[in-house]
Image 1: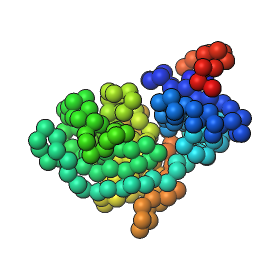
Image 2 (image 1 turned 180 degrees about the horizontal axis):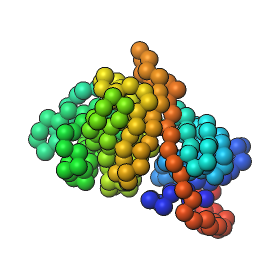
Image 3 (image 1 turned 180 degrees about the vertical axis):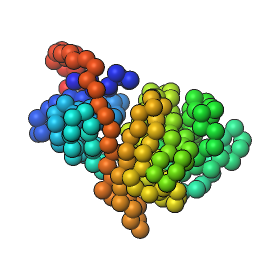
Length: 228
């Protein structure tokens, strides 16, 4: 089932006893786990809990609003520098299911997300897997604005769920915001991030946002039989 119109992404509904095998076969073929934004759409269609390749993700569905609980983040690194075009650039990084770099900038609207994002995405610091690159601006202690260059898409996207979460958590880890945090993304949608901060990191992390069904279709077995 395709769940996103913004990029090529497919979520497969499978019996629980087949999930791990199919996920391993997909990974061997170079496919990433289903993106968080697509899990949010999938939860809206299913009306609740989703067991996906990155783990079991619980969801609360109220109309077209979905609130997802994420796996706890890891690999938090605060306030270090990497060289971008020969300039030491302050960044932070965190893994919210996939790796993200977060940099705070003053002129977010005028920032060259495409070029700088690409340089961060392919930076030697994050090889061989690479990383997503987020650029954030603080509005107040419960609101930030974010633009994201996504690995795999290889361009700026209208929204990135794990990127919004990463930006909110890094902003909290650096003492800039408190939960909940509204994240205004490129599409002008607002995503709400909930979390509990601990001495070691974060837990009880939730993403809340809207979903819209824009089309439905059918995928026959022949379309993916060659990967099984």
